[in-house]
Image (cartoon, rainbow, N blue to C red; front, side, top):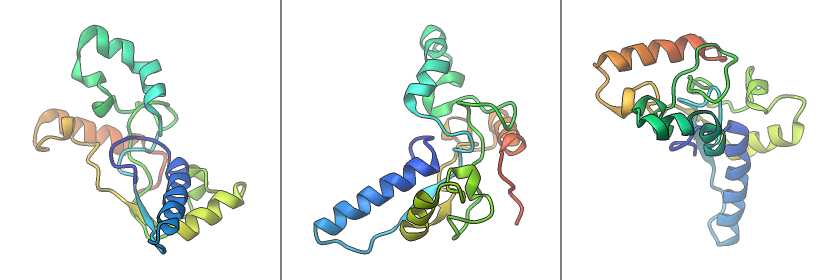
Length: 156
């Protein structure tokens, strides 16, 4: 889940739970989810993107402001921008789960994540400019900015 948008891990956990229940009710039980966290370190919805970047993109047509290529964050605290999310792991409620909305203060959602999520993976490529080759200057700069502004520890 989460491969084509930048929504939060918490929202993806809720969706995974609903999807799992829907599948089970149709005779396909026991399914789990993996969540792409490659580019949702600062999660946002399309509506939030539109409020911040939409008018600028529509007025200029500048692809740097397009939803699928949202500008990278300038600080770890910035909102409605793109940065690396939680590192890949098999443990959906590990040490940094609180930053995902799955902390001890949210026991119900934390329990849901533990039961329906197999892990977090990076299968999106948000660090690549326009999802392209990766050797262009824009991709190199974008990669560095995303690594420098993530609110998550990337070291194990």
